[in-house]
Length: 328
Image (cartoon, rainbow, N blue to C red; front, side):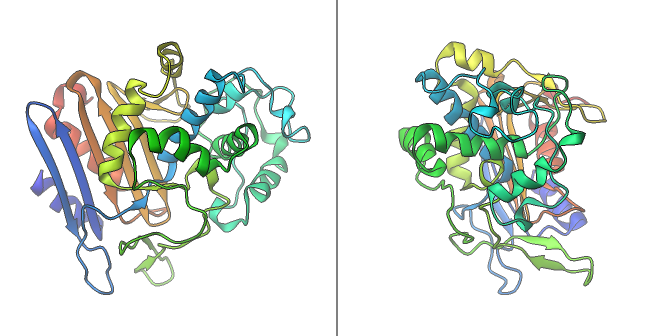
């Protein structure tokens, strides 16, 4: 494990890596390697919070499903109830959004370069002619969860982050996970992205998370994600029938072998359940393996259009520790 991490850090120019693996009855491997700050040379620490990107979707989907269980929302309700002027709003349901089957496409601009969720939705709506019919395909599009995050707020009457804290974070004792309301990342960890103009890594720690919203705004740490990986994959906060429906997955329409499947805010890759997440400067993976009651959490403080480095690192870890569950 040490050698595999060191090799990927060297080959892919990774500033720092944090890895947590827990296998009941066998042991744990929890390490931080490399730098938290390239300028100061400060080393990475296991307890530093980082941006978790699309792992946010697992929280937003759970909040939506909790509202469904409370009878305040239905998965068959149409998007038109909240956004009547959005393309196909009279055909797109909550379930379509949860399952990435709405047919919506993402705007051409990166979310973080826009100013608000409303601006993201406006940019998406302008591409309405490219939308597919809802329910036709499972296509991973961030705007599905941006919209769901806004619906959590509209239905619950709370800000999205407040609702997630109330219904998920507090019940599970996750004190280091937040849905941010500003650009700041707590702590001393910095994130980096490749700068084409200079050929160097550029500090991309701080950016506007408002337009990212329910698609990927949240912040957490290794310890809290360990708690969440098992909780979300075993349905700790949901009724059994809700959890069973959540895990009725379909392959995501992307090319290549070993494509993940998507349910209601959850990914499955073989026997592994969880989600991957990327924002500028941070790449994270969170996976739970029910057959071994095992958890893998990986964060790299680099992410850009060249690299999404937590994915191959997690694959390497899984092949070392759980070879019989990993496709060759």
